[in-house]
Length: 389
Image (cartoon, rainbow, N blue to C red; front, top):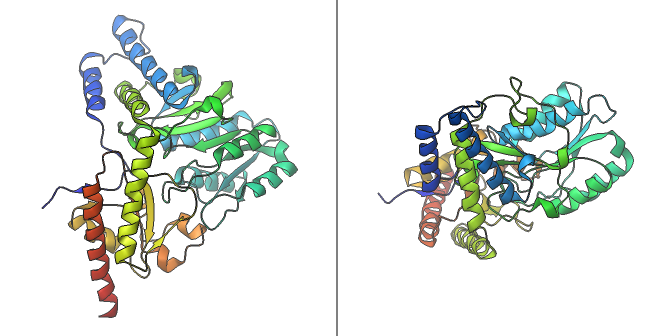
């Protein structure tokens, strides 16, 4: 059987060889506790701080603004809960977000709503782009009550890009803190926080060839954040607990690698591969729907809906043929229910049930795309026949 084709890079990416080697070196040689004051501890601390500088360079921030966490989910929760906690004594108690967010934000908001926090859910266009004018009207009326606006930069399921620069400027002009889930953006596309009024940015190492279990929250300009994990003064007293030194070092190496490889040419090439996949599948499967088509999208993501088919059946059949994809977010792909994001976009249930996400990386080749087109077409044709048998 030919080598598997991994088209699920939004779920995770293969750790780069230099990342693995750096982590092995730390595990074997520099395994001291970075909070210790002896030589071994100081060596570990140096590696942590060098990684902090690397992450800061990747996103255009200052090293002191980078807080290391266990990944994107913790970073998003820290941004939201930490902001609400820091502003608990003020009248700012409203959280503004959307139903299109990753579960790390959406479910956090739902839990906070059950606990008495007012959550304002912004409307969005059918293509999955949030309604900026609705946000403008809300802030014009209630800016003094809003603790945080949290909207993702690039949707993990559809790849749709939000007008983050406009949203961030809108929030800044009205004195409202803005957080963006940049997990599917940072490390893949050019990011310069110095040129944007974003206050809080989340990122995750394993989305750009780093290790799982480590990420960062970038907190601009010394914004107050209440720690959610208590147990020590680590990370400027914003995240207690002994640092994951091997993971942090791996994140730093991955950040340096990503910064060197991000370019307009790489972006154009990846977009051409995505378009090649879409054209090929559409030519063979005329009923397919491209969810989010027409909106600005990141170059490596496409979400294809196959009406009346089931995503699980498609994924299992593709996996047997060596093509790996997912049904929306990897963290919820075990569910038989259609994606809440697609349903919130107004995608018909019969399309949402059969929607598959294909996500590419710089490692994806034209040959893999061409083979994937053939395999997808074969699987969809076979499953479609069972509907009419």
